[in-house]
Image 1 (cartoon, rainbow, N blue to C red):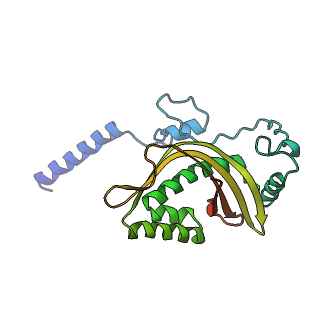
Image 2: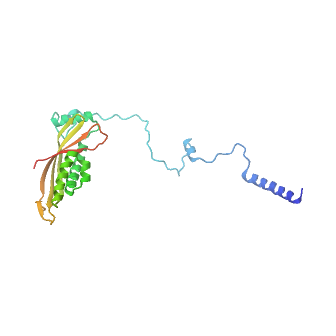
Image 3: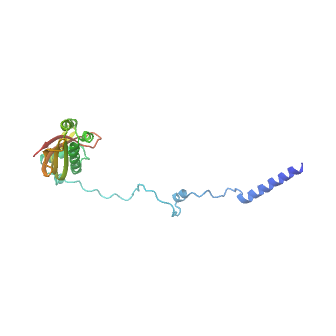
Length: 234
């Protein structure tokens, strides 16, 4: 064995002893790496740096008693009187579709009324197609084409929508139909290509009463109602 081999062996033994003194020996009693999640799951003291993630908390306490169902005589209070044709129609719709809420419907109908009137004035066919039945859309589209043919434009501005009330409810097979009377104030004029007014008055607020009928298939997953009929009391 030459001198170089002896030197390398000595260095190897020295390095081994140094590593052993630094890393230690595994005896089977070493603690595992710290696992904050495992510690909390086992009931250890909470760590102040752990942020609880939002989630559903299951309450094991006894359930509070549910509210008593609304008596039939008060079901449509504020909408119609018990025993009327409107009340009977609403009863029939709710029996077919338990999620139906006429008050929520009226809120949506008010918004739809304004959207449809303005979309018609602006010739916005895309919006109208989503809100109207095919038959009503065709009649609206015909009127828009007539304006375009004559180079006319309609300007409409709502001053107020004073009332939106249910005046009819009916279930035809699986289709629910609701008729609403809208009372509003608006300013509307139609101008020709030169800007001259050919219909309406730009300085006069008109009182408008429209009677519209909306329909929805109660078996459809689509919750939206569409306008299927229009009329006016003016």
